[in-house]
Length: 269
Image (cartoon, rainbow, N blue to C red):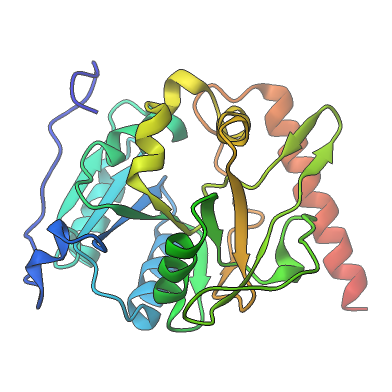
């Protein structure tokens, strides 16, 4: 984000020529924003699958790299130099939330498709479906793309809702775990409105993902999910500690990874 100390100049890669360049200024323009942190194989898998399955014209592609690793930046330039309009490189690292703020400061379209660097897309039409939901349901803060059974133990309402275009979706039910409750805001791949970000920006003043989730809940927002999934998590077991993440948090993440691995081994016996 402009004005932050400790940032190097951000390399700006050649801009793509789009068939409809005016999408940036239309009411339905979408900017693709992806956060990355030193995982080249997963990043490539994510971007390649997105490009292969997305059928909606993207106004701008923005990537922010938070590893502080110049080799990773070189990889991005070699591999994706013809795709991204803007690449932001943090040196030193900023962490997830400040990285999101810095990337979103570059957005000038009404919608943001937020993406993380460890997902695989497997069907087309998800962007059009997500846009239909956001237009139909003003209370939806993010439109989830993961299959219902892959929802991190979240539950969803039994009622299936329909947009004017007959896109099926459900609302995410609150999930209480220990002493906190999740209401549906997520940084997983999902479409969201720039105007909703501007209501509470910058995120860094609000807190981490959980605190942002509470802030939107207090404003009356909730998460929704498409009935037909379009993306899967492929990053399990490859957790990257965030800036400021405590030793205890890292241990808990490692224990979760080991429990998942044991469950998967038992399932394949």
